[in-house]
Image (cartoon, rainbow, N blue to C red; front, side):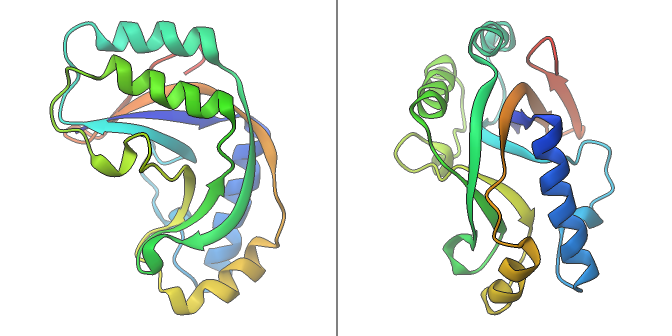
Amino acid sequence: MRTVELVCSPGLEVAVRAVWGRLVAAGLPSLARNIHPTNRPHLTLAAVDEFPPGVEHRLAELFDAALPVPVTLDRVVVLDGSAPLVWLVRPTPALTALHTAVWDVLTQADGHRPWHAPGAWVPHLSLALRFRNADLRLARAVAGGQRPTGAFDAARSYDGTDRTVTALTRLG
């Protein structure tokens, strides 16, 4: 599997990682426990089985022209009430247009994950996986109710087979 992800600006990354740390301190699940070097706050735009030839170059051109994209985080929720704890991202027109453009570039790719498709996509930054809805009130208290702002200033692709990332922008 290959993903297309936007990476947070330094200040926004610090804010998300701080919540990851506070979740751990509160005894809750948190992505802070994932110590793999590729683990960092990101927004997934798409995931496919493999990139067709030339797609990485086309994505890099797209991102180099479109980034940075300003972002404001919204509520902390459990998606579908049963799995990941996430910080919703407010979908601005610029972010929505970029998401659609990525899907246009990936038209010929196989294995599109439907939950990332335009119209179905819920933009978010993950805070914890396998989270219980019963712990949501505590998680929101730990997150503190703030609505951090920043930007997505780079893009990358994660390769699920070899667990590596590839920069899709000059800043990567």
